[in-house]
Amino acid sequence: MTIKLGVPSKGRLMEKTFDWFGARGVTLSRTGSDREYAGAVDGIDGVELVLLSAGEIPRELEAGRIHLGVTGTDLVQEKLAGWEQKVEPLAELGFGHADLIIAVPACWIDVDTLDDLDAAAAAFRRVHGFRLRIATKYHRLVRTFLRDAGVADYQLVDSQGATEGTVKNESAEAVADITSTGDTLRANHLKILGDGLVLKSQATLFRSRNAAASDAERDIVRQLCQKLDV
Amino acid sequence: MPELRRTKEEAQGLLDRFLATGASQVDTGVLQPAGTLLDLYGEDIRARAFVTHDPLRGELMLRPDFTVPVVQRHMAEGAEPARYTYMGEVFRMQEDEALNRPTEYIQVGYEIFDRENPAEADAEVYALIREALAPLHLHAATGDIGILIAAVQGLATSERRKAALMRHLWRPRRFRALLERFSGKRQMPDTRRALLDGKVTCTAPQIGLRSAAEVADRIDALREDAATPPISREQLDLVEAVAQVKETCPFALERLRDLAVDLPAIADAVDRLAARIDALAARGVDVEQLDFEATYGRTSMEYYDGFVFGFYASGRPDLPPVATGGRYDALTRQLGAGREIPAVGGVIRPGLAVELGGLSA
Image (cartoon, each protein chain N blue to C red):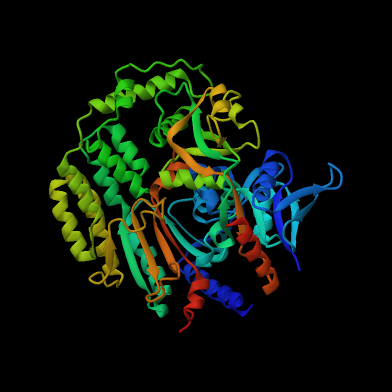
């Protein structure tokens, strides 16, 4: 009888996750060669480690193929419609901090708020004949945020990387992206709108509400949560 | 699936009824170019419509309604006046699991494009749908967005402010925030003051498609707005009073006539309401009991700009309206590339009629 714990498979996110569990007496490690995605769990019985891309962990939690998973709040909320019904956040892990924000060129001295963005978008559409483009990969979150703020006459254009560069390249007029220090935004001559914070995200341990579990499996989850103090 | 078969039978019955008025049947593709719908509804429609992709034609949407393709068809090749009817599936994405709404359902619709007598056309569509749904004993709601539009147009303020209010007419929260700002209820923040005083200069390089001239234009517009006197308390209250009218038709009309004394800009729109009420009465609608709400449909029926209506099952708040409709003159202007024609129409969801016991009773 085992339960599955999904954690990010590489980089700082994986290391920090290992550290966080390690500090609570649960040792996670990768096994086999450097290239093989296999892992081991020590300190508790019945927990199987599944190494996954952080972006796929929300989907696996939703499908109930893993019982627990570590990923960013941003990814869960972007990828899972009605996420509260599908997963339960158990603990914020205190790293992987990132804010999803709306940023515009710093040279737009007339635009500091979402109200300004909305007015600028209306004028932009009149002048250029198309809706002001906002580059992002967080389509659902940004669309809901802008709808609630009453911003119109914009369009989201997909950008899966180097989003901050899209304005200079003239493939977008503004961006909605993750930032932790704001350095990349500044380097690309962008500024964050005063009320342009869409979401504050960090690495979080989630429990799937959809993973079928026997009494024994539920017991393991309980024991693990006790050990982790969550 | 007996439900679906019954739904199709009801749909055919409704279509036959509409065809019997002399309307011509139109068919439209299930796949519609996404660009037109996005330009019309904005990005929000992506949360409601299924978007798909074709390597040659780009983004396409599964038909979220018939109105847009039917208007396009009429503007391109229709003769006037025209009556159209149609039947087919529409597709709507559902993000709220709890509501358990279908993503695909059949609509049967009826649309009139006619310049001669709008009140008569309004009444014709309403009465036709009411009669078709009579066995279900539904509750009707009516409204007229045109009156609020007239109230905004009649404000003693700049064209720019009126345009901003019109742009957000269908977003009540935003509309109210704008009204408050334009009536001087909110102080200008210091940063905005500094900008208007010319104390903010830009050190960042000019990047992107929005030019320095466009930024300067907006600052000019902001200066002009700062110099525009606030909308008076009285005018604000009048717009508010118009938006709050909610009575049966005769009382609503009386109330609006009273308001029109102080807000003469709505007088024509109120006359149109009166003519419509007469036309409805002439078709046997009991207007004494018919509910009227000035802002009915304001949040959910964004392209309507005049008469609006919906039919609801009493005691079933879980169900969406069985039928909805209204007037959409502005939509024909937007899709007509320089041409326009007054238009009104409505749709019935036969699936809901079946759920409520069927129309053959």
